[in-house]
Image 1: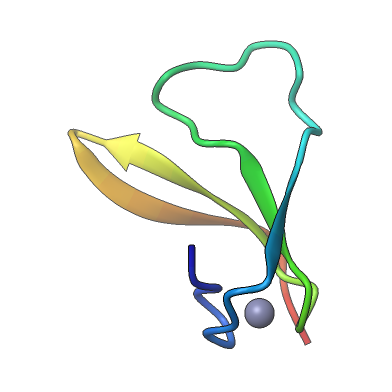
Image 2: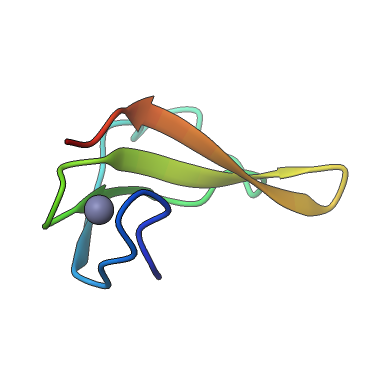
Length: 56
Ligand SMILES: [Zn+2]
């Protein structure tokens, strides 16, 4: 999926929440371009971007 910060499509999935993983939370992704770390959470059925580490 596209990086919400810079729009780059080069992202890698990283696994920093191996425990407590729920269906409401997608895997954590890191942008290969700007370094943003984020994931998509479903809030009331709608995807919401959850920024874990800001990008450059
Ligand atoms: Zn990015």
